[in-house]
Amino acid sequence: MKKIRLLIISLLILITFQNTALCAPRIPVYKVGNVLYFFDKSSGTITGFAGEPTDITIPLTLGGYNVVSIGASAFYGSPTLRTLSIPDGISTISANAFSSCPNLVSVEIGATVSYIGSRAFADCTSLSNVIFKGFLENIESDAFHNTSWITSSGSEFVMLGGTTLLKYNGTSESVTVPAGVKSIAANAFAYNTAVKEIILPDTLTKIGDNAFVHCYSLEKITIPPTVSHIGAGAFDDTIWMSNQKGDFVCVNGILISYRGTEVHAEIPDGITAIGSGAFMANENLLSVHLPESIVYIDSMAFGGCSSLLQINIPDSVEWIDEYSFASCALLTIYGREGGYAQSYAQYMDMPFSTEVYVEYNGKKVYFDKAPPIIYYERTYLPLRTLMELMGYTVSWSADSGIVTCIKGNNVVNISPQGEITVDGAVSPTIAPPINIRGTNLVSARVIAEAVKANVFWNDKTRTVEISF
Image 1 (cartoon, rainbow, N blue to C red):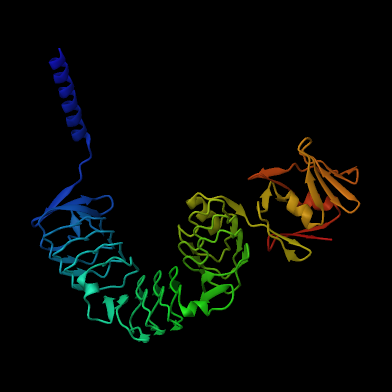
Image 2 (cartoon, rainbow, N blue to C red):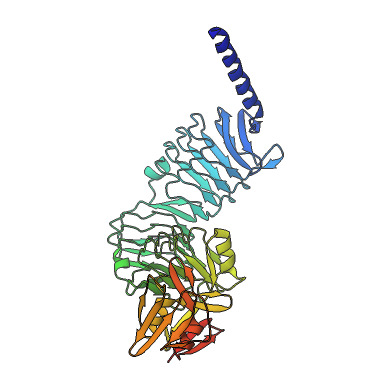
């Protein structure tokens, strides 16, 4: 019986395996020359290969579908690959796509490639010749790590296609980057302790992450007005950076670093962009006010601002990177209903509210715990903050839930139901408080009018103006 039971179990396992194999989705395979290409036709991505490729040109179509991308690790570790041509029509070379191909010596990259991922050609130790016909929008700093093209290059400037400066290998104190360069890649000058002055060409548009980081002697840099993108930490640990004055370090209207200590940051008018990493990991920041001059917010601009509660997005903003607010778990986006701010918040699944500002006796007020909101056509403000703003001392009874506010001889009681008593007289208007993240918010107008304050709603600036 035991042998029969084992035989039955074995048969069941075999049947299950066969059914699983038959039901498993098949990856289309197409043969071109002596190479089999594994191809995801839905995304136009070559995902792998079989065979012994030597000198290959990536096909532009497979099975009647366009090839647009080389997938992650698609040709990783090929021992036979020697020369490679990536024709026009391909847009993306993903991470590790051709890494660790020890005999790859030459690569030609078509003009339509706009992105080369991390370690795409890393550890191709024989790779000495790279030809690029176009202009890269983005290349990861380690894309050609440990290739002879980088490590053994006799050139002062290691260029990709004549437009992207990948690496500076020189030791000069004064460096003039060649005309025609449009992009300086991430880490291109990193840790170069000799350079003191850098002159950039007026063809330059982009400076990558950490491009000049730890260039400890760099004290002078000429940045042309054509530069519209500056990556995170591009000038960190340079004399030039330490010599910049003020809380806001800007280049060509791009805020590249906030060095202030204010928990409520008021961005100066005239700044057009919040650069990558400008506020990154500022754990004290509670709110940010952006001027109407802001056009875009770059990747990780506020990444890791774990205490950030609110930021307004004016109608002038045309683009926000999807990682601009990474790890800002408490953040609410404020903006115009139906505007770009709301669309962005919905796309990112972030809390959104219409913009509301508060002024008291002509001075803007910030709220540390819960921001103002509009609820059923009333503007609600944090109760304690509002009363303390008007000079009252605030206490709360745990037994009755009544909030008592005292200012001199004046006593204001607010019940949990929203009934207001001022010096013993009951106010005719009732507006029950609402609770946001543990903070009670009350109608600004109802409370202010109860204590005889002046209240005005400025619809143009969306501001509640309170005064005595």
